[in-house]
Image (cartoon, rainbow, N blue to C red; front, side, top):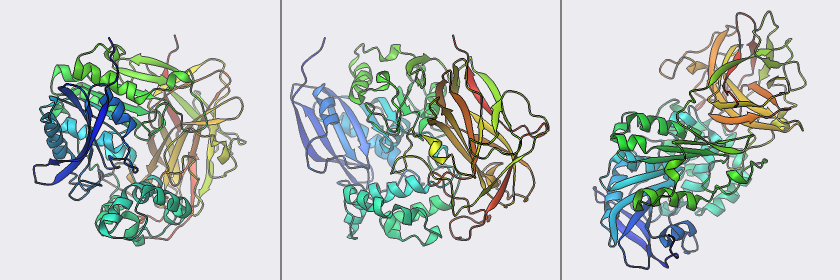
Length: 570
């Protein structure tokens, strides 16, 4: 049975006191009908209210479906009091504030006392924090576009996304509050970023970047710590999974650097507090980027109409089931719902990694000339024999450019624009005669030496279409000094051969007949990853750069390879 949407009214900047007396403010969207209604909460640093004062269409739609919708500015942002502490800093307040906000929502007039929370990106972070808070009135969570460890997406500094996020999204509101000069709005900051991004991305030494880029000295200090402390997981969620008492939908996209949200599903399905909470976990990964606009594609490929989803429809299916007890079918789709790229279909699974996975090694081969796709590098399952190593020179003054969106978000783009670069080794398989599905987490085992005492190695898995379109699928990086873990950094002995392990992001893709598997090996992907200056310095206080001659070995004693999670085709 369906009902007509309710008319909706909105109350602006309603005060919610936190346990320490700080006031957070929220806009409340109310159905114009006799209640009570369940509450859907979202907590964001990105301005709960639109700039022109008009209501949010998403919040209106949810309210019109019979919910009290509460959109709250997190501590220190826009209308809320306090100091903003970003998610990558120790001491963030979002678990405690999440608890207090949920319980405040439960006591609102016309509330049933049942609360759900949702959000994408930072809103996904605050949603997870609410789950870990174990607030008594919380019934379910819909967390989008967020992973479980800071080190999953920032093992070392990512200047492209971090600087764009700071300058365009976070700093304007802080600059306005502190009486600093323009830009005071995201729109003006976006324009400035497009004009000046190269200045900030290439700025050395990083320690001399002005505080104003980050919104003043207090915020700048958080970023300076981030730039100097690689491998530090400030989330510290590893002991909190037994605190989760509610079902969580973990939603991400294959072209989202936060795609490891799937770990949230596996960890909570194993460790959540009750059998009902463990059984209620769900994960959904589709053909999207880091966005809540699931009805458009970001990049240069169309993955089919089946991959386009209306976010509000998805939210309502989840919340209607858990907050209203309606049979929406969302719990009948399997605990893991994956969109399989290449085949462009949804598929339900029961575990991650998939139990039927056949881990298959594709070995590097060449006669020593694997530079560019015109070289002789190739991939196959045959073991290597006596083969000539490949070499390239990595110059941090001329790094391999990242092929992604303006604000340094991932998307699907033709990587063949990089095919002329001599600092990329390319290993390709023969064109396929049968479909090949790769679903899981690829791992590269790389035997390499460098002339430098520290350097990076990058790996990128690519699906080359018959027309030459080189579709990026997954990537990873290792900083050589951290090859044995962040707890025991060790510089290299120049010329010595080491084995490096590069974990690539999860992926689900069917390589169709006529397509080729391709793996690109290099030492940079900038500004997706910060440049390694090859000097062994901290990369923060130093501006000295040296080139590194890199040698990649692939012989019987040094079997460089990519291990692919191959799924047998029915």
